[in-house]
Structures are given as C-alpha cells and as structure tokens.
Length: 233
Image (cartoon, rainbow, N blue to C red; front, side, top):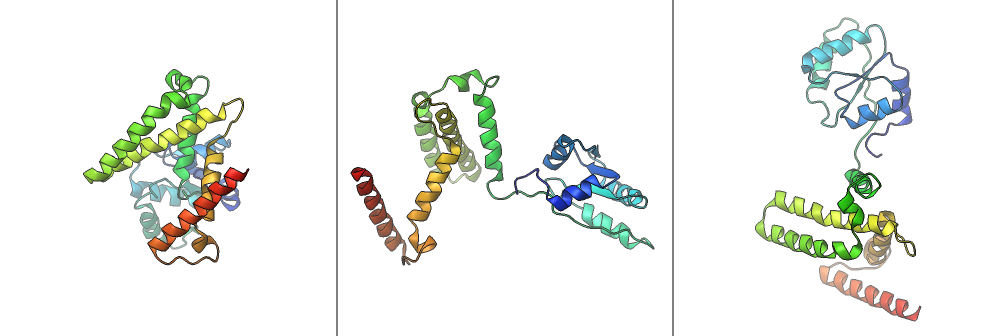
C-alpha cells in the first residue's frame, strides 16, 4: 500500500490507544496519523534504550502505539525485547503492519511535486513551459544519461535517470492542460503497460520465445502488425 496509509487493523489500534508516539512529524506515518486528527507525541532523538523503557512503562497502565519510522527504528525492537523479557509480568507486544513502500511508491511523490510546481502558486518558470520549449532538455538529459553509463559512476547514473524521469513527468503535466487532446501520467503509464504486455506474449500469453533473438524477432513482428493496423484506421 502507498506510504503513509494504514491498514484497517492498524487504524483500530491507533484509535483505541491512550498513547500514540512516533519519532518526528517528518515521518510519513506520523504526519498521516496527525492529519487524521489523532494526537501523536514525538520523541525526536531520544536514546533507544530510554525510549524502549518509556514505552514499556506506559504500557503497564494503557495501550501504547509506536508509529514505525522509515528506517525501521534500528535497535528499538531489540531494546524492547530485552526489557520485556526481564519483567515478571510482561505486557503483550504486537507488530501491526501499518505502512510500507511498494516498488514505485516514490513515483507518486514525484508526480505530486511536479503537479505542485506547475500549479498556480508554484514555479513561474515551470508554469510557462510547453512541449516545444522542453524538447531540448529531453535530448540533453538523455545524452547525459548515456555519458553517465559510460563513466561507470552509479550515483551519477541514478541522478541522470532521475532527470530523464523529470522530463516525462513534466511533459505529462503539460499535456494535462491541452484544451483539445489532454492526457496525463496515468494515460502514459497505461499505454506503456498495454504495450509491454502485448509485445511479451511469451510472458503474458502462450507464445514461445526462449532466446533474446527470438524475443527481438517476435517484438518486431508485433510492432509491424500494430503499425499496419494503425494504417488501416
């Protein structure tokens, strides 16, 4: 599920607790719970051992919920386990999955940032761009990505791929505003998914292609058939 969302079980735990704590308002889960109107006590940079003892002390009187951090709170689980095992009557400790990042979750953030930049009150430079004015940046960023691949610098490559992604997001956001033929990032993604599925029948259907060469030949045949069909329309 997208970052910041809670499962139904997790919401019940949060809403029924006397104490809800988290590290910082900067944590996605903490900010999401606070946005729902639930008070969250933040602990910032308290030592893990002290935090574990505090959570267990509170739990002697009422239910306590700790909202997990993005880095999984290194050492906290071990500290709690050590303290719990030393108690004559330990409280029940349960881990409830409330939020996790599926692959691609950060893409949603990128789309939201691009929308903010392009919207009223955002960036004036971004607001005035068109497909034509952005075209040269698409070429430049693609070339810089190729150069980053050749350099072998992995960090540089990741950065340049981000710049290429920005161009896709930017063009998609501009396209939303076209008065005659608008489309958006979801339309682009949907068309790509359909194409990938259609051109990989050896994966998504019952075709057979066991070598890279057979895959390339199959791709070329399907592409040619698609173009011929488009020509007939």
